[in-house]
Length: 299
Image (cartoon, rainbow, N blue to C red; front, side, top):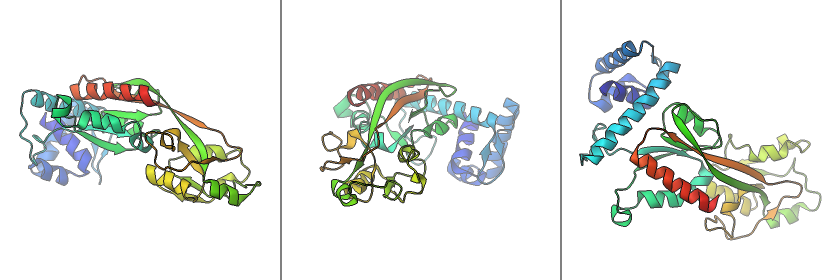
């Protein structure tokens, strides 16, 4: 158990010294535990660089370590061992989950409210979550690294040790402020019209511009916040692909004003999946149930 905990700490913190400080042991003790784990598995698990890098066998062992530590924490909670504090061995366990920003701003919000509320509301202790906001196309990497127990992803291909559950589709519309559209006139040139993108991983707008001559040269605003992204489009900074769930007639609306459609562009549909560890953790099972419930309602 301590060897697995040490491996996770080394990877999370990047160096043996930082892991030693968190675990309240010496750096040589950390090194001895990692060497012992490597001897047991017959593989080099960690490349001794700064920050440390996992080998391919190391990624497999780290996934196992995360799951074993999660089961250990869940068992302690079931037995009523809730010492907490700063000690990483006794602190309350948080369920690590990767979710994309658009889901987090919309249909995933009631999931958090349902699971994370006080026990007096739900009748059960809250599920503490540690969220990683990651693009739905890239959260798969976090699952492969064992950094999260569940992820909202666009990948149907199942990660080793996980189950893949189809959730539904998010629809994005090419939207623009009516004021900006009017100012551009009837001969709108998309290669010159500013476009709003979430970050460098956001290719929804790029997929629309691929068929536009010179579209790759369109000026960009980069706005890495779901709500601010919608506001930027509404304020006329440029056009962008807006989730229907964040439009004015949605319960998750980010703005009150209506949008105009960008002439000549089409909707984009993104299919979402939940990938989760196969490990039967009660907190993870509750998360899956809640995600399924709210995905049926909104996707």
